[in-house]
Amino acid sequence: MNYRAVRAIYLFEMARTWRTLLQSIVSPVVSTSLYFVVFGAAIGSRISQVEGVSYGTFIVPGLIMLSVLTQSIANASFGIYFPKFTGTIYEILSAPISYVEIVLGYVGAAATKSIILGLIILATAGLFVPLHIHHPVWMLTFLVLTAVTFSLFGFVIGIWADGFEKLQMIPMLVVTPLTFLGGSFYSIDMLPPTWRTVALLNPVVYLISGFRWSFYEIADVSVSVSVGMTVAFLAICLAVIWWIFRTGYRLKN
Amino acid sequence: MTIGQHLPENYHLRARFETIFLQPIAAEQGHSYFQAPLLSAQKGAGSGDSLPHPHRPPMSSIISVANLSKTYGSGFKALKNINLDIKRGEIFALLGPNGAGKTTLISIVCGIANPSEGKVLVGGQDIQTSYRKARSLIGLVPQELHTDAFESVWATVSFSRGLFGKPKNPAHIEKVLKDLSLWDKKDNKIITLSGGMKRRVMIAKALSHEPQILFLDEPTAGVDVELRKGMWEVVRGLQQSGVTIILTTHYIEEAEEMADRIGVINKGEIVLVEDKATLMQKLGKKRLTLHLQGKVTSLPESLSQYRLDLCDNGATLVYDYDTKGERTGITSLLSDLRNAGIRFNDLDTTQSSLEDIFVDLVRAS
Ligand SMILES: Nc1ncnc2c1ncn2[C@@H]1O[C@H](COP(=O)(O)OP(=O)(O)O)[C@@H](O)[C@H]1O
Ligand SMILES: [Mg+2]
Image (cartoon, each protein chain N blue to C red):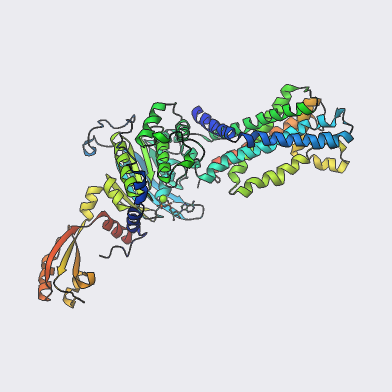
């Protein structure tokens, strides 16, 4: 194992984060605060309670997931897309490092960044609504699992994308709608039965449900199903990445 | 001989263009970019740094390419059954027109492209099964300027060392940067550097992990003449410290100036590999130039067997001949000229350059 290479890539990527600190951290915090103002305060004041917690409190896990998901994908896809775009990928490809090490470096950094972000949003939310977390260990587990899984997913997108439009496309057209429809702002029990069945096809539902359970012990689906679905998606991403490196898809001619 | 009309890429014209027009860039800097360097001795390098190259112990091959072919996804066959050995410690120039497959060959050896067929050994290690060992021996400076933008010079060069799994060694990085006259730029962001400096940053990155082999893919393309000379000094310094250097170029003068051996590649095939000196000797032609008394508009039929060229509006007559041929034909040419009544004031002969040899080879293949 070439640990020094993993470290080099990881630190390089983290350095990029610190350089763009404002954009990386401040903007998600601001937009999350806006969600609280709009959904929590304005709309929430007219909704009494959802399954025993105030609406503002209810949406916290969903909001964190929303940011962690989108930021994981954005960070990881950009992290690997950019060297492809500038051509500096030549150095990664010609270095004595394995695929596993490349993925560890890039995905590790992207996931670290979105975990930090998730925790910052959690702290921000604490300023608006009272929070207490029933299962902190599970909360962290879901957070890490989601960050890693979607960073892997972002890595795949970054390799697949051959233009900036494609880089934006999947997050915008697929991930954001799925997240909004995935129960960030409501419990899918609130939906009519048919729509509830449709919603269960959305993988994000399982993530948010599990994550919310770790906070309040309320869940749309059982926790084990949530964990199972997340791990399944993680496995799919790993398989795709394994295939990418085995074939050199969009990396090597 | 009509050099210039058959050139595959007008490469010598370009070389001249750049020589003439890009000079102000060097002048503006007011000093030589490169201090004649002796980059730090590389471990595992051949013994006797001070020995001039030809007196080294017999050189074993450090890179061995066997039956290598490359077909791109588009179906284009960029390399056709390449066989090539690079000797330890030499400067090898891979010479060929644009599109010949030079970059493709380098990319495969360095792990950037996958071979379609064949085998490559680097330091005895298979580039596919022992890629870690093979790649750690290699430093690559690609053809295009691919650099980060917002990192500092120091950070990007240190990053490269880490990527190759080497422990931190600020002293080495400092030496490399100083040898490449980049030391005073070490804290500058790469984006603020000139093109020539960026290229040197790429060389510094390639040297950061103390490679035994250095690939320079068209190191001086688009580089002004002073910078080019500086680059050659760097390369020689590296060779003296034991590094094997493979450079590609389509500037003949570069191969002629630098290389110990030259390989000519054209349309994906190695046309020839030869010691430079042997190549010059073996394929060298001489040119006899006759400065005529008065102008001649056309040549009589009796001289048609000599394939003469009338130049300067009929003021000079040019005859190319093979020095290794049994008969040069000069004696009979001169007597036939006298019989035809063509007189001359003066004559001179010149050895043809590598450039001429190259044009002949490429035209023949
Ligand atoms: N990725 C690619 N896909 C298809 N053809 C390519 C690719 N890269 C290079 N080629 C073709 O392969 C040939 C050799 O290219 P290259 O190795 O870059 O030549 P050189 O470096 O000698 O100029 C060229 O005809 C080029 O168009
Ligand atoms: Mg090339």
